[in-house]
Image 1 (cartoon, one colour):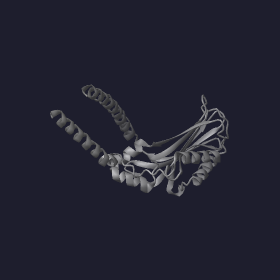
Image 2 (cartoon, one colour):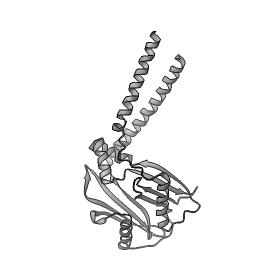
Image 3 (tube, helix red, strand yellow):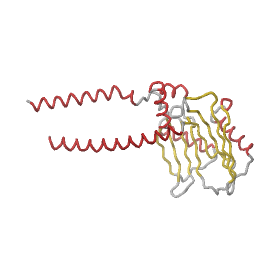
Image 4 (cartoon, helix red, strand yellow):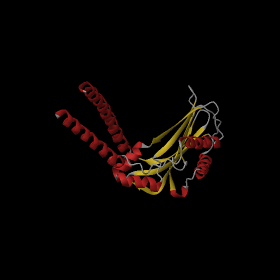
Length: 252
C-alpha cells in the first residue's frame, strides 16, 4: 500500500512538472516573433539566387543550410525590454534576429560564400565572400567604391535616406584595394543598441554586407560569461539526470 502511495505521489509530481513546462514554455522562450514562412529549401534557393546575381558560379561547391539566431541581440532585447515587449519590437521593426544561413564551400579551399536571409520574407540579411588576400581585383578610388555600395544597398531594400554614414576606410591589398563603409540608422536606438548596415567592396565587387542590431561590447562579454556558465550547468544537469535514471532503474 505504501509503495502505491509513493508511486502516486511521484506520478502527480511529474504530471505537475509537465503542466508547468507546457504553460510557461512560451513565457521563458517567446517565439511568436518567429515566422518561418520560408522553408529550408526556399531559403536555400533564395540565397543561391542572390549568389547568382553576383555573377558567381557555384558549380563544384558543397553546401549546407541551417536555422540560427543572433543570440546576443535576442538576449539584449529580452533583458532590457522584457520578453513580451522584445517580441513585439522584433516583429514591429523586422529586426534581423532569426535567419536561415546557407554556406557554399570546397574542401581545403579558403574561398567560401555565406548568405543569411530572413525566414519570413527572404530578404538578404548578411553576405560574406571569403577570399585570399592576394586575389587580384580593381583599385578603385573611395568615391567610386562608395557608389557601388550605395547602389547595392538600394537593390537589397536599404533606404539610405534613413541612415548616416559613420565609418569609411580603405585598405590596400597585394593585388587590389578594399573599401569598407558603415551606416547607422538615424534616430533609432534600443537603450544603447543601434541598427547598423555595413558593406565591404573588394576590388569592385561586393565582398561583405551585413545589417544587424549593434549590441554594446560590455553586454556581449557578460553574455559570453553567462552562456559559459549556462553550458556548465546544463552539462551538470545531464550528468545528474543520468545518475537519477540509473538509480531509478536499479530501484525498480
